[in-house]
Image 1 (cartoon, rainbow, N blue to C red):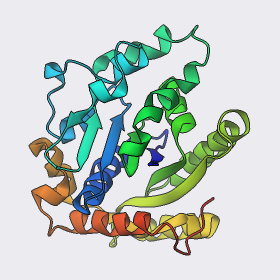
Image 2 (image 1 turned 135 degrees about the vertical axis):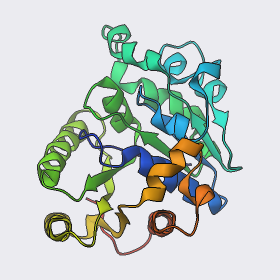
Image 3 (image 1 turned 90 degrees about the vertical axis):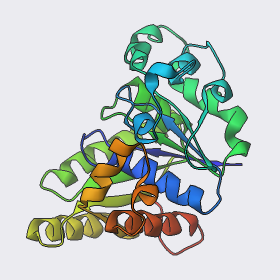
Image 4 (image 1 turned 180 degrees about the horizontal axis):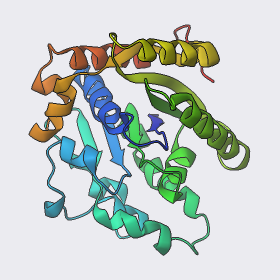
Length: 259
């Protein structure tokens, strides 16, 4: 059965979508069947994989509202082993439409269940908020990868999210783990970046991935070409860092402890 991993942080601009797309693509390169579920109404994971949201017959919105099953909304991508359930702007209305529905926080969990055995990993790219879409992602997940930007306020945002995870565990998903914390936008020339990285490792120890994602222009350019960075420039530091992160994720029997 596949493993469901949400990529979450309520703070925007920390590299959630970059991590979702490029980690998934790196694992797909290893011939693992991977699915991305784009729960962000902005649809950045969708467009980063070259999918025109205007051409969609079905999207995740249709899954949430019961118009189709998740397999019908799933689209192939430019990589053989990588598929995506695309987002649409209609997702903005999901919280209102499901407000009175019983079990509204479990809609995504129930939708994913029939396809879990189809994929080795299912990554859920979360929006930068702690609303119903993110709650659905956390309830559906086995674990969470938390991207943390190496800047001032990083620990504050991380503390808020870990508090949310404790509440989700206690009320809705007792098996939810932290798969790992990934340090993003790391600039080795910046003393603050080193200080933030050291502080995160001090507080969270082995829950932090060894791989750090550097600030890299190629990571910013690749989405405009509708490609993961490994297809845009596999020799770049950004591509090599996500390939290294994929190896860590695959090493499930390694020594790194989950929180």
